[in-house]
Length: 342
Image (tube, rainbow, N blue to C red):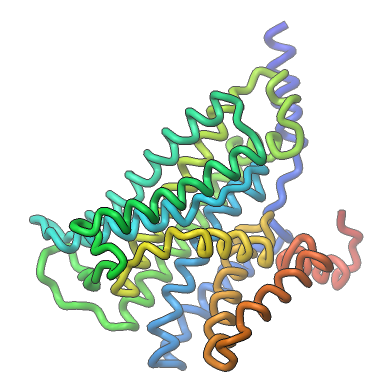
């Protein structure tokens, strides 16, 4: 009986349809990262300075796409882990160690954020918390993180925020401060590593189980899967990724403030993923970069109405392109090659 049950589980997992995007998403991603790597040879100045921050928004969006698109779990708490990672990097840079404090901050930010997310997820999922209640709890996490950053001003700087120096890229302490181009390429390599590493993990059994949870959680429970443990693992990985991107953001932007954990920024992360496409890691990444760049441009041109315009774009995408920009690209690809996609 156990053998039949195990065979049925394996058969079900093999038939689960993942949604990583069109068949060529890997090649599209490689082409995109290559183009981004060549960009500093063509463009200099403000673009090279600001684009790494947008790319790290993209990594933050991928951490939500892992939960929302692949496991069907909506979280408004990614900004909290992002901010925790940013402050960990700031404290690491402020209290230099015998080794490069920047790399210590990156590792500590990812580990601490992942641990907090894992513990939170374990207690919530083992208690059977789902859907709306989970959304509210994760939103409360962002509010709590913001209030702690404000109240503990002796450590975080309070409303004034915290200055974070740019990390040296060498292994030792006291190395030369990298320029905009060097930090741009450094961030780009790490963003690409996060994308391909996460995509590889989702192509394995772990990703198939998450897809099964998204499609029919009760069925997987009947087959004997520990759904709470898989959800906890997904939440821990997403928290680790969010904290890691927050640490990189802090040292790239040079500053971190409590507003990063606020409700507004938490909502923006959801908007990025919805516009880019929650079923595609690359779509979430591109959506975050595109919307952040659009918001920056529109706010400079018409500062009084830029939020209205971004909101209208979000509404149009939700109404007419429910699968986001990635879904639109997939549909166009299928039509171009003459196939009828699902």
